[in-house]
Length: 432
Image (tube, rainbow, N blue to C red):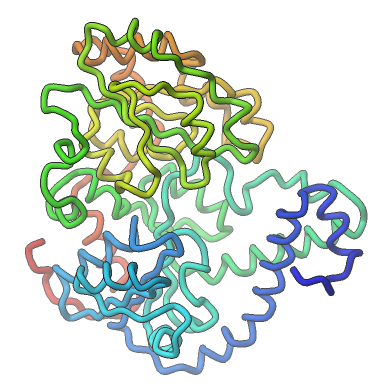
């Protein structure tokens, strides 16, 4: 947002959302308006239905990576390109067998103007979307939403503030809805995800097939997992075969982690885990306050805080014996393995006051979530001894809640679905 942006627009937005929020909203709106002309001109480009482009503004990771790697191995008749932002990311994609172009390069623009299919995972910024006019746009998304997303976020906020604020926010919301209609297909993990994407994206259910998600292929193991992990991941992490690996995945809080995260001291860990073989790995959200976790968790051999970028979270789900989380969508994915799930959520009342949940948290947990350390750690110690009916019961609740497509082969189902929509002839897939 430049200094020249009219104060009549920015001032009321700042009052409601703060400086950072105002900058994001105005910059995003201006960028969308500026790219619209290029987008419509790019409809004139001659597109190749066998050129499929992938990108992820967070790096060579998650659903776009898994699907692109599957295509490299199973469908050599296709040309998968990775649009990279850094030299390191570009090298990772090349090592995986992908064609690579840099995000801001002339080659990157040319490839995206030529592509028949473009894949997103987070948002349009994953690729240079103005160059994708006329291409089939496929959204892989990055989880099944528990928190409200996109058009489902609290619409009453649009009615708050001054006349200028309300007018601008309505215009902003209209531009988002218009942009979302450019998505042709969304790959849903299951029936719950399909239902939520219908309202969040404002597009019909027939364009949201519940075919599974590329993440599932990694979490279920096999070739997709092996391409990400080389060797024994538990051994690489220093976890012995006889130890019970608990993975704690706390999600991001918009207002930071200091207000909600309770202190865990070493004495409490010793008391709860004394006669157990529990090892708890903590992997924070990319936007989390890592220093808060460092201050509030003990320096203890049974509680290990992982740097966020060190290990692919979906490979951790694969090897975890038990999952602990809160409002993260990771529990929907982990339920595929039919292993125990526990919820640690001391701040349900406060969290509801943010952007909101699709329904009360208790509808999912049945009120059986933990709100303090002692009860959680006791349950985890019991789980390590094979006495975790509570965790298994919670897993069954999640399975019934999500109604995911758990059949193996999500990547190939997605490839076949996209190829039909794009009119791309495919050869039988090579064994993966």
